[in-house]
Amino acid sequence: TTTTTTTTTTTLHSAVLPNTPSTPNLPPAPSSKIGVLFLNLGGPSTSTDVEGFLYNLFADPDIIRLPPLLSSFQKPIAAFISMRRAPKSIKAYNSIGGGSPIVKYTEEQAELVKAQLKERHNVEVETYVGMRYWYPFTEEALEKINRDEVTNLVIVPLYPQFSVSTSGSSLRLLQSYLTSPTPLLPPTIKHTVIDSWYDRPGYVSSVSSLTLSSLDSLPPGPDRHVLFSAHGVPKSYIQAGDPYQSQVEDCVRLIAETLPPDVTVHLSYQSRVGPIQWLTPYTDEVIPRLGSEGVKSLVVVPISFVSEHIETLEEIDIEYKSLALASGVTNWRRVPALNTSPGFIADVADMVRDALDEPAVSVTSACVRNNCVDEGETTVDDMMAINGMKDDRLGNAEKVNGRLAMLGVVATVFWEVASGKGVFSYFFGTG
Image (tube, rainbow, N blue to C red; front, side, top):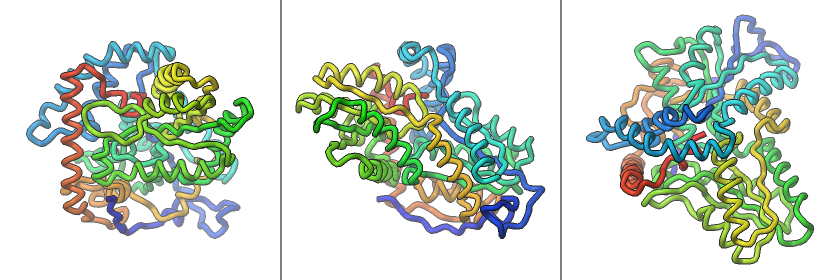
């Protein structure tokens, strides 16, 4: 069960924004400089980057968190798995052009949001992109933010739904940089985190619009099915308090309410591997079941992804499409990722603008309320006194469930080594 933690927050709006038509009562702040940091997974640009990217992925203790007695083996295990998985991964990336487009799309999104903030709200910002597992790394973005003397920072993980293994991993890394003996940002900088945004009307509308376009391209008739495919996580993560599943289900419900009533909606989870139980039903089992039930027209919506990458371009477009056609589906459609869709970009700009007026959420607050802070960690609030929240802790049940979750991941690692089947694809398609 997810634990709800109440935290003390402070507002940014009195010191963040200059006077604008939409905020006439705000005092001018000519010396303030606003930055927006977009966080994402990252991905290899070329086939020569793949092994290094995989190593960084598996070396992340939020992805494979070993028990304390085995923690010293984290990097050797990461090196071993990445070396073994690289040839198969390279083949997959070669099938979509030789590299991941995720960095290109993220940088385009950042620039377009910057322009929309100026156009829609008369707010000038600098935007930055920090990737978790490949260039440009989060550390590089923080160095740029420091050089640019940003005074107020909005942090946007580009994952609509929060999971410990995506937004949580990026925020914990960010926290480690901010609380190190030589922090990468000065303690005077104010920041706020937008930790999830799956239920924003603009986001829901953007996905709905693309889905309706795909539905309109199908032959007329009552046989129209929409399958929302989300990335999978082990069930033990959810039992440990990860809010991801409930947020995905709420998101799908909101989008489904905008679709025609004669459309049948399904939700499934892709990319599961290993001997442990993952969120069900599995996409690669739902598709042949629908085919066997006589479904001919199927629209697949990649609900967890805002940019095209290996899981949309290879897993869905190649693997799942082939499975669907072999199962009797004759009218296959895949809804594109949001990428630089104008409605999506406008909504992200509005979301950033809203965050500047709302109570600030520190990196630590975002981690605590989503159950991804360990007991005893040095927090951003301890170091930077953002929200005055010093000592929030998970309850004992959550700690026990968290340890069980990590044991499940360890089992998956050893299953990977023993079986030769890849675990890497679970982690958001590795770019």
